[in-house]
Image 1: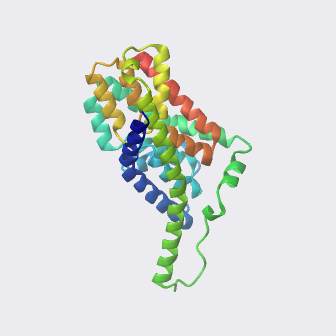
Image 2: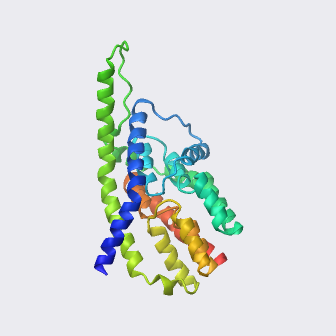
Image 3: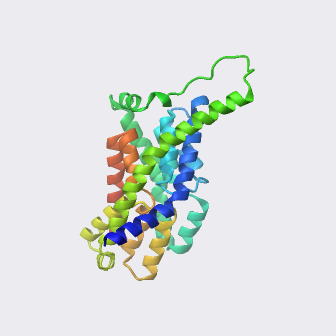
Length: 297
């Protein structure tokens, strides 16, 4: 069993390496850009979440690989709702994933999934952030957790006569620093999540567990589905495979709704970087959501 867990971990890390590398590089680029050109998004939480979601549509990275990008936004003093809009949109609203969902799954399941996702991005996320804004310690926590190197600095005043090589060297050095700053926690998260996900995949008796849909089994499977990090579109492919194998429809909808939308990796990011109540609240929401859609279908 130990060798199977190791092999599954290596396979999982291999499947995530390209997306996570892209996420780290893009997140560092956003952080560097926001240092010189602060993001102007206004105070409308709903519109900010929508803007983040629109940016995430062509992003095409899974919820786990979107974490470095979201981290680049929040560490660059960007708005949390923008980061969350990107986080939930990128793995689900990519045109290829949308097409796969409506092609591989029944129409009722596909429509239900995307109606709920629109609600999460446009209503749930702004509501949660508004609740945090009303918390007296919220701004103090953010200010304390953002390191000094992440503070946005205004461009120095000058006559614009800086040499190109000087500017390029400064940008390259700043970009490298931000890449390393995102890479260190990302490697730790990837290794930890890979081992935990592999252990769950190997140890849990999936065939027996999915043989019958009961409230307690649905709750347990929902917990595993929200916990396990998977690459983009894996939720659709896995749900479609379960449907072809005759697994109860409740499990098919549960995995389609929660498997690729949220996981332990964005949960840890939110817990460490943004807000512990926000992290726990979103994890609990998707856990209950998976259980409910499993019961309904």
